[in-house]
Length: 323
Picture 1 (cartoon, helix red, strand yellow):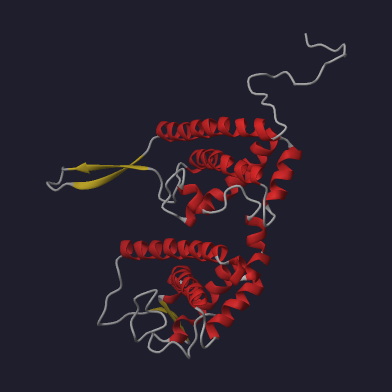
Picture 2 (picture 1 turned 30 degrees about the vertical axis):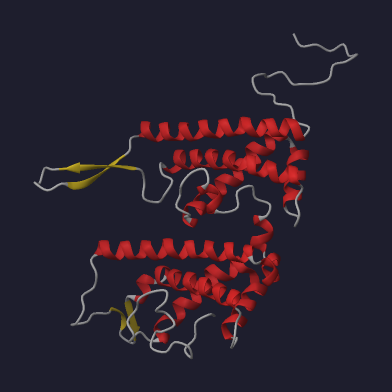
């Protein structure tokens, strides 16, 4: 793990990531921190890179690059631990059973405050994971074991690889949560639509080349052209499926003066507006697909069959015909 009792020192180790009381003891948060480390960090980094990270934590004089990596990892670990184990940390489990902790000097927060706090930890924790992965990719020579992780090898085969690439075409504020919501849709679009359109041979060669350390220029250009196609079609699918790009739903904000004070009122978006948004996203996807088709036609053996149901074939010196 990348927190310890030896380095806790009156919660000094936690203070850079979450503003906690100095009376917070390490044993109180040890289990949540360990659980989040094993649940969120180890699967992403892989066993070898995880052991490298632990070695950096215990090192007496890590390099500046290593220190920055550790900081990002601890940030993700701390916030995800407090979010994922919030309800458990609110309880006192002892010989008398499970009790709610209370104090005469402090009051428990209101429900809306609890929800806002948990949502903040969740968003910031997952975004810190994204920052951690991005940092590792930018410093691959210093962390060679990261390239051996299943996350890295699988991610290199993806057309859209992170939240930043989505942000280039549709603003999601770098949210890893939205990226994760879109991930399965992007996989389905990549295989179910892109592969079906360009053919198995071209698609498989494209993905295999992307997975290498030095992909060919034409395949790099093709990925760049296909990123917005996958992004917009996936966004459209997500909106149609859930009515929302985020977990909060689609709402219009309006001001109401019925009580004498202007206050914001949230009104759910109608099904018609949801479909309108999905159709706009699909229209953008179609526009970018036409751009990608031009590249496919110029650099690959690809011929568009759009606008006709008749299969294209070379009928030279043949007697078959379509009636």
